[in-house]
Length: 75
Image (cartoon, rainbow, N blue to C red; front, top):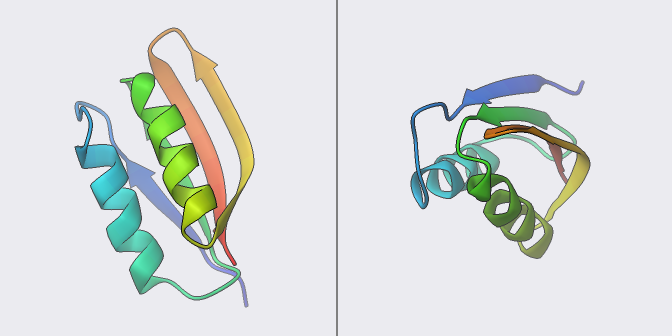
């Protein structure tokens, strides 16, 4: 069964959001989803690149001002 995990990266600047995403991706099962949010929009692109290079898929990505939201799935 697919689980949904939430990761709030508000107040964090790079590389912290990527490191937190990496740690969570390592500890979840294939098929699980992580919903990531934060307020340093440059981190969104870095997270997206990391996920796509390391066994994940970006299902959704939105930015509004400095805020971002990503939904990623571990493959």
